Length: 423
Image 1 (cartoon, one colour):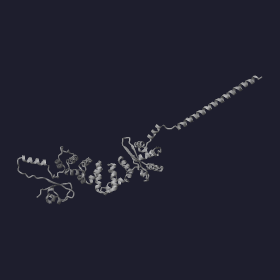
Image 2 (cartoon, rainbow, N blue to C red):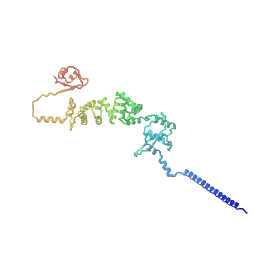
Image 3 (spheres, rainbow, N blue to C red):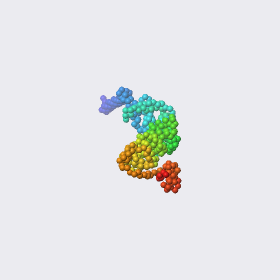
């Protein structure tokens, strides 16, 4: 028979055994649950990673990454943004990566000198057509497949080290947009272009040498197509004649180049007077808001030339403005001649003037003939002397001296001489 102490320990032993069994069962249950959830999550993760892309989403992805649409987007990006993309090797389509299309955009839209960057190494070229976002027209752009990693690094190094890493066309646009004074590095880069060399050579050989900065100013007042066409023609023809330069200056003048107009006016005023068509001459005169000596001479030559009424009036309006006077309205050419060219005697008289003169003489009563003395003058020109002037007007040298109170035979150009009556 067990004692009370033994019964008490037996009860405690059963309680501890049951508690241990319960604890073990609980741990086994928790461990089983943990393993179950871990395996379940891994299964879902693998299933998600291997899940195929649905057909509509695949088509959408290809459409967003097409070469044409990528280039159309790149066409709106800045120079710095495109340079950053030169390290992006994300594939687009047809074997091209984003950096390939970025390089093509830099060459086409920002005029990167790719040939110089690659030291003249021949590269493959393909044409890619895309539609601009601004309009319906399609644009062709040159892409360069097959460039190596070393070549891309050479392009990046070239862009980072060169201050103006552009073609001649890119340098031309930089010059047009630059403020005065221009960056010396920009000018030095442009001085090395075939376009600058062609024009500078023509100016020198034609007898109109200009400082390099003036040549750049002349080029900047034109457009790129004119300069490009001129350079290509010079490569073929090598025409360095003065007439070639005059025709080129005329093209710049049609583009409203003030510098070209000034050069031609100072160089060959006769060419403007004789060879310009009326519309070109009207536009030429509009380029001069202020008076110059050569311009005033041209205007006076125009009003005494057999030009059209429109040219007479245009030249007269300029002369009146420069003189601070008002041009007659309606225009009176005879008054213009009397004001600005009093020594010019028209060789022809209008029929209407003759008719008026005859009618007046028929109506008025006859009067005794009165000798009318006309005052003749001569404006001294370069190369004039008393002997030539006396022979021209059929007077003696002594009569010329007395009429003008001359103490010597020395004449000053521009001075007006009084011509005495012929003996």
